[in-house]
Amino acid sequence: MSGNAGSLVANEFSPAGARALPDALLRLKPEVGLVLGSGLGSFVENIDVEEEIPFGDIPGVPVSGVEGHAGRFVIGQIAGVRVAVAQGRVHLYEGYSAAEVAAGVRVLAAMGVKRLVLTNAAGALHPDFRPGVWMQIVDHLNLQGVSPLSGGPRFVDMTEVYSKRWRQDLAEAAAEASVPLCEGVYAAVLGPQYETPAEVRMLGSLGADAVGMSTVSEAIQARALGLEVAGFSCLTNYGAGLRRGEPLSHEEVVEVGTRAAGQLVQLWTAALGRDGISK
Ligand code: HPA
Image 1 (tube, rainbow, N blue to C red):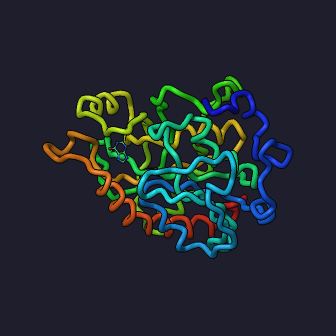
Image 2 (cartoon, helix red, strand yellow):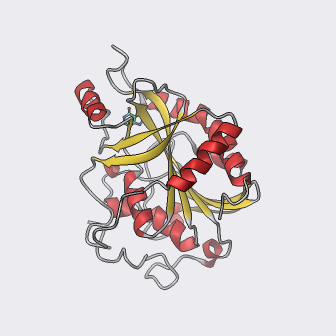
């Protein structure tokens, strides 16, 4: 139990909230927030950093123990647009509640971010999708059995979690930057174990194109706060059993993610440099 049930309508990190953020985080007013998944941390090397705060310095923000998830907020500029990056995240499979998993999104919203990009590493399920390629998330299946809104706001609309308008802009930016980008549905499972081949077949028949263990709690929280959301899955491996006899490894997931981070930088530099992308 996270202890903040019922407090999600009013963001506890907002200026009037119980855990108002330090001025250092509120002064810079970033426009776009980004949450980086496994192996994608190197993205921040391409930011002109203005402020950097470890998650552990903000009471109420949990710190991950997972390798590849150094936890800090980095505020800075890419292509002249001020962004706030949550480098690393915590997961339900570490034992955190969905509300705790989504705490970083509430911090970003309290900083003033209006648009949020969520990234993750995911297994490819769609027969045409290959590891090393980015998938833009068009919708999700929340198969984690929990919501960050439990005890908080009810019946938040989820018809368009991932902004269609923004998605089209981003797809155009990807094409301009020559970054291969497919589109699909992301299924979130609890983990921490990878799927069985039978589960992979089930997820495919449910309409999922990729599977991972994160992102949906943050996306749901962001929509409840009125943020516009985009989601990107770095396809790091084939879903279990889709390539006969090949076991999955976290090291491979981090390695493929690290290599693909460069393309995310190209895509984001192109996207943020486009007129109106940050508005
Ligand atoms: N399954 C679940 N989560 C993942 C995978 C996967 O195959 N790859 C990266 N994260």
